[in-house]
Image (cartoon, rainbow, N blue to C red; front, top):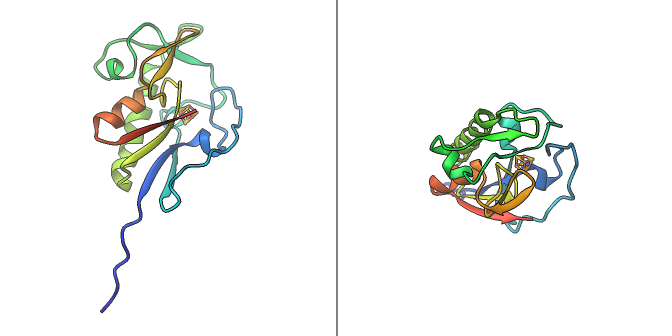
Length: 150
Ligand code: SF4
């Protein structure tokens, strides 16, 4: 009888944590250890998936409305010059969720403090505050476990 292989566990990971050059300022971070030796790691950068280039001007939440509010149409994500980037961030979140659904990933390791990937804290202008990134919020709302990585 043919032996069936157990399904491979899949996890999404913020691509910048894996050494990809996708951060807003073009900086390459040291590659982080993801504690999932048996899992297939799927790198995602929601901001690039949303069509933003690297490097790109930094973006932040305009006021106390963060990721979960943005998904409900409240608040904006803007650059220092006041350019509205909200649509790109939402598109990146939706494409990331699509990848999670297609691959069956049930977990995501995400870079803290990013307006996309932050799980507990994000920037409102230059202030770091409690809040959640747009992608982190959408994944969480769809039952994907989000894990913050510094
Ligand atoms: S924190 Fe998220 S959106 Fe920002 S560069 Fe890393 S993967 Fe891309």
